[in-house]
Amino acid sequence: MIEVKDIEQAVATFAEQHEGYFLVRAEVKSNNRIEVEVDHDTAPVDIDTIVALSRHIEVSLDREKEDFELEVSSAGLTTPLEGVRRYRKFVGRELEVLLKNGVKEVGLLECANEEGFVLVATRMERPEGERRKRPVEHRMELKYEEVKKAVYNLKV
Image (tube, rainbow, N blue to C red; front, side, top):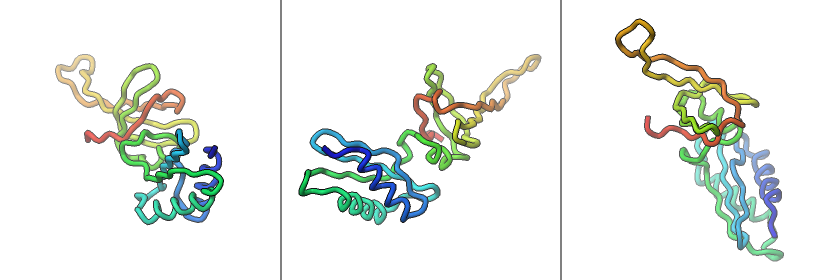
């Protein structure tokens, strides 16, 4: 059976030769169906890179030993964010974050580091003693382990 670690190693070798690319997800499903998602730190992933990576992975595996089906794609805007590099790519953009405690937050991703990220949510609130609501910013420092799912907010 083809192991995920073999796919991860093949993508890592490719990424060493092609600066800025990184693995988002690698999965080996039943019947040796391999699914790979990649992304780039600053640019969209083009079709030529997808083709080159597919060929690279195919060469690193032995079809004579074991047959497989390979699907390589780029991580899209709807792909949930996982890993520091994916979060950093979306700094300055609005995210929809579902926390493990069930709370949903929508806000601007201010920064991301190894431990977590900062989300700035703007809510309409009525300050004490005032008649009208006004926008109030809430800066939340969140840890990755608190997040169930985070995605780019397409509703902007």
